[in-house]
Image 1 (cartoon, rainbow, N blue to C red):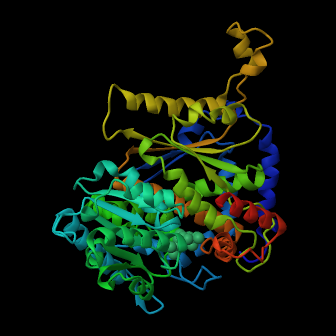
Image 2 (cartoon, rainbow, N blue to C red; image 1 turned 60 degrees about the vertical axis):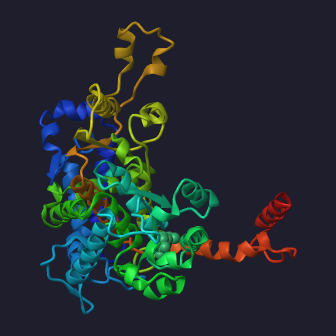
Image 3 (cartoon, rainbow, N blue to C red; image 1 turned 90 degrees about the horizontal axis):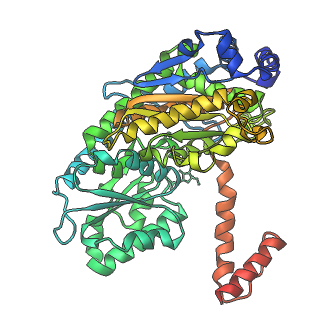
Length: 540
Ligand code: F6P
C-alpha cells in the first residue's frame, strides 16, 4: 500500500487483538479448542507446517491475512513474477523466480526472453558439469578434476556452500567442493594447503566481479596455480560466474569459460542459477534440476494458495506478528539435520540483507520494527548450548524447527532419537511445566521456582519426508517468500543492500594507512586513529 501501514485499520485491529491474546497461555488455547492442532497446519509440496504452537488463533490468522491484503501482497507477488521493477532503488526487476521457471514458460522483461536465457545458461552449466564429472575436462597436465574450489562471498558463497553441505550425500562423481570467502588469509591458505593444483578447478563467483575479497582470493589462487603449473594452466583451472564479462576478461579468465546471470538476480537469491555451478558439478545436473523443481513447487504454492493456506504467507505474517506486536527481536532457526548446519548462516544473509531497512521504498522512514534477526544451530547441539534461554529466559524468541522423516543413512535408531528431541523441545517450549507439577514430583520448595518451565514459547515445526535436492529447493523458496511477505508489509525494498557500501569504501580508504611506510595522516575518527596506531606498532 502507499503510505504508512501502521496507520491502517488492519494494523490497529491486530494491536487490539494482541492485547486480548497477550495474557493467554498456549495451554489455555489448546484446552479451549481441541481441533486447533489439526486445523493449524498447512501443506505445500512435500513440506508440512504445524503452526498450532503459536500464540495465535484462527482469528489471528484472519487478521494477519487482512493486513497482507491491505499491504497489497497479491499485486506485489504478481508484480515480481511479471518482471516489474520492484527493486526501486536500483530500478530493476526481481526475478530469482525465473531461475527455476520451466523452459516453455513465457516471460519477456525489458526486451529479454527470460526463460530462454535462463535455460541457455543451465544447459551450458550442465554440459560443463558433465565434462568435469565424467573426467573429460582435464587439468593442464591431463589429470581429471577432484576438487572444485568456489571463490566468492555473500550470496556468491553462502548459497552454494549451504546447499553443498545439505546435499553432500548426493555428491556421487568423486568431485568434492570447497568454499573460500574470507579476506582473512587463513581461509585460502588453509584450503589450498592439502590440494593438488593438477586436480583443482577454481570457480570464481561474483555477480559484480569487483568484490575485494573474491578478487584477492582469486589472485592468490592463480599465483598458487601458476607457481606450480605455469601461466598456460589458468584456462584449464579457472572458470567464472558473473554478470560482468568485461571484468572477468580483465582478470584473465576466458569468457568462453564464464557462466552468466543478470542484474535481476540478487546475490542472496542466486544459487539456483549459475552461482550454483560448484554444487551442480558435485551433485550433477539431474539432481540440480530436481532442486529447481522443488523451488518451483513452492513458487507455485506461494502464487496460488489462498493466504490462510499459504505457507510463506502464514510464516511471514507470523514474523510480523511477533516482531511488531509482541516486540520479539529475533527468530531462531533450528534444523534437526546436521546437513543443514549452514542453513541459519545462509538465512542470515537472505533475510537480514533483504529486510534490514529503516526507510520504505518511497524513502520515508518506517514507523515499525523491520528485519527479524535470524540465528540458529542444528539441533541437538543447540539444546546443549542456548536452549536454556529459549525455555527459561526473559525474552520471547519464536523459533522454526525443521525436521525430516527419513535420514540418508541411519545407525542404531539415531534418527528417531533426533526427531524425538525436536518434538520434545517444541512441546516443552509451548506447554512448559508448572510449579504445581514440579512440587508434585517431590522437589524441595526452594528449588521449585528454578525448575518452573513457563512455556507459551511459540514455534513452527516444518516436517519433510527427507532432505533431498527437491525438499531443499522447497525450503529455500519458502524462506525467500517469507522475506518477500514481510518486506511487502513493511513497505521496504527487500532487494537492495546500500548499507554494506560505506564500510567497504572506508576499508579501502584505511588499508593504505595500515601498510604504508609513511606515518598515517587521515582517519575517520579518533578512536579508529588510535587503533590504527596500535595495529602498526604491533605489526612492527
Ligand atoms: O556486500 C554485500 C554484497 O554485495 C552481497 O549482496 C553479495 O552477495 C556479496 O556482496 C558479493 O557480491 P558479488 O557477488 O558481486 O561478489
